[in-house]
Length: 468
Image (tube, rainbow, N blue to C red):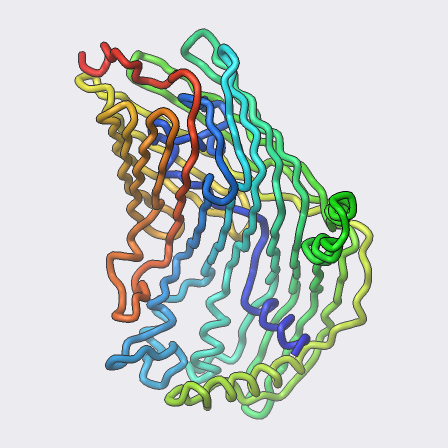
């Protein structure tokens, strides 16, 4: 079973980086306390304190695929894409050559910010996890069709995996220059908790009438789990626990840079570069994958009319599939440098001359992450009808398709509640089992913080600029 688990991970996930997702709907949202995470030049309207977990959690899924690609209604039940009733043509029409799938978690454990004259400072501790995936279309064609379309050659080469979980301690600094410009930098110390990486350099499959031949080669490696090193010491005192923490399998650093400039009275242009950094892992276990040849009959005999039977059949098929690969004995790698993909953001905001509490924003985002790179353009309408209430609604076009986002921010003195989605499109069409059928893009951000100090936002108590 251990070998089978390695095979499933290797075959199903093609990844080239760590985290790739930020809550972009918050970029132009007035009073949003965590704007500095999108652009370190942005300054908060007040100081704030965020408590563990409640202070802010982000969950994200992004893909050009949908749940409806893989599950289909049949009466009152759902069947998988492998079911005989699902047309191969209909299924494959929804599959692209490369099919990205990104999963992300960002949880604030503790955060606070404060102002000193024309500077703004932030310090936060967070837990981050990410898996950015590209699934080759040939893989799904192989599973569904298995050579019945007359194509006997499949190429899954250059598959790679990188799943990363780490904690981050970050300090941010922003300074206002002559009331129209601010610049900022954010330095991050990273402690790796877990990484899983693989690179299948060669994976070519040829289907012949009497034999399937395979040429495969690459490697698979994983770090020890740091959380086990920590919890193993929980029976001791705090000094022992701290010693366990220092046994993390990886350490690193990253930087964010940003700038924001007001011009022509009604415009603000801003730009940022996020996640310029790395983690240096140690004590990595590495397995080399050897090439092999194999005879196999494919997935075409699977009958999904009985769930239990399907599970047992798939188990047998995958166990047999695992025999293709021959793993060498694990080797210990002293060091492995993991470079992060990075994100660039460019924003332009226009304040309406007739009502400056209403703005229009345009945000361009590009993630540099090899084969998992993506681009997005997001256009938003932002309203702050009251100094303590702000809303944003937006439309985005990206590598993953289009989406609709919205956010609500309630931020009086002493209390801040924010809730937003970069895309609520998955909720627009669902099966009776509450499964989204047309879209799976979802990036949810929510949290409660506690603002303090003098208000220093766009709209002072006596707002003479709200209307011109």
